[in-house]
Length: 396
Image (tube, rainbow, N blue to C red; front, side):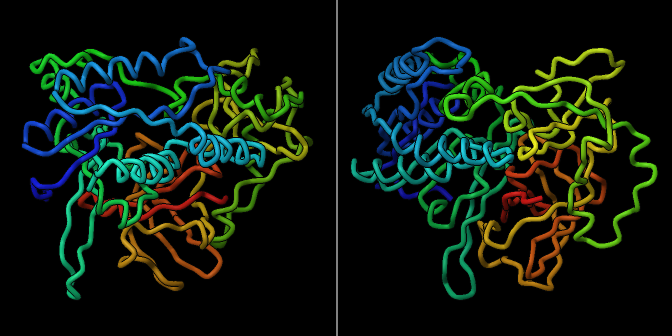
């Protein structure tokens, strides 16, 4: 449902084609629109592009706003971004987990710090170029309930990155391109002559860009060499099958005696489950993958081949305090179970799973074991019609 035309909308204009078309469509629909460019990062340490990439983005965003004919503002949110996103990244990696800063960037920056600044400029709502949709309904008590839906373009759906938003944040959010495909967005930009029409999509960490992750993390985390241990497939032959849900959700804990030292690494905290690049260990027919890591002992464990049993998990657990409901009216209580569609990373096809709520954990048991389940990442669950109703930080 579109807002009334007498409201003022702030568009987060990044210099990319998606936010540019979002601003254009709102302007064409007759809304009072203005643009804000956020500078959230100005440190080039570890980045793989030029030192002034954000300045190039700023220049394009200014040209887009001028072309559309909307006011343009600049805000420096780099202090908030470092405190609420980057410092969180460092803490999680240091603890041996793999965070998703893009999810926090949306809930903590774009729809919080940015929204607060937009309000100070008179905005009633904020719009972004995310490929997702929103609708609403009135419940039996007369309250408006907002629904976050997957984008119409299955190849670009970005609802996963918004899995930590609240009802309050959704109430002020607009996603003008969520019903379009990426080729349609490009075509709209070309027809309008927008300077961002042919601009490539940004990659890497939200607002930081594509980075050499170990170099980036070494700003605060020290490199420390350790052993890389390969676990062979016959290790699993004698393992007992998990009998309980708790056992199913626990990752296997390895020791160095379970395998063979095949190389060295620069620090267990710099690696993530499922990683294959940057290991620099040869002599194998198939690629090696990280299947586990032990930050305390500074050991990473590796398995050969995409089908290595150590890469797959039948279930995962989420601590009660880390469960977030976009739809609080659908929150589960201990003892309840629910069939949902789940993804544990961006672009992963939705997987059939059962949510099982207990006092100790929210468990997710998959119909088919899942590859690369990683502590610190977000699991997000959807209904059959594509509504994202909740999410949680994977504990184990």
